[in-house]
Image 1 (cartoon, rainbow, N blue to C red):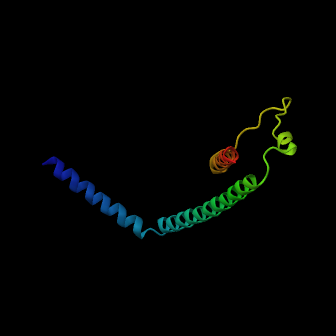
Image 2 (image 1 turned 135 degrees about the vertical axis):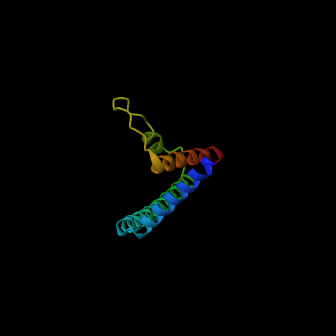
Image 3 (image 1 turned 90 degrees about the vertical axis):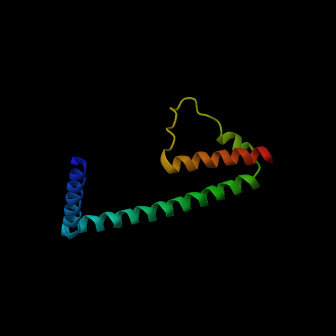
Length: 111
C-alpha cells in the first residue's frame, strides 16, 4: 500500500517538475542554446571527418602509384636518434593518421 502511495507521489512530483521546466523561459533558452551547440559540433565533426577521409584517400592513392623504394623515401624514414620521440596524435586525427599508415603498409606489401 505504501509503494502505491510513493509511486503516485513521485509521479505528481515529476509532472510538476516537467510542467515547471516547460514553462520556464530560462530553461527554454538553455535548451535552445544546447541544441544549437550540439548541431554545430555535429556539423563540424562531419566536415572534419570528410576532410580527413579525403586526405586518407589521397595519400593511399599516392602511395599506390608511387615507388616505395626510392632513396627519398628511405631518407625520410630514417629515425633521428638525438631528438626526443614525438607524441602521437590523439582522438579522431590520431586514429585517421594511424589508420592511413596501416593502409599504406598493406598497399605496399601487395604491390
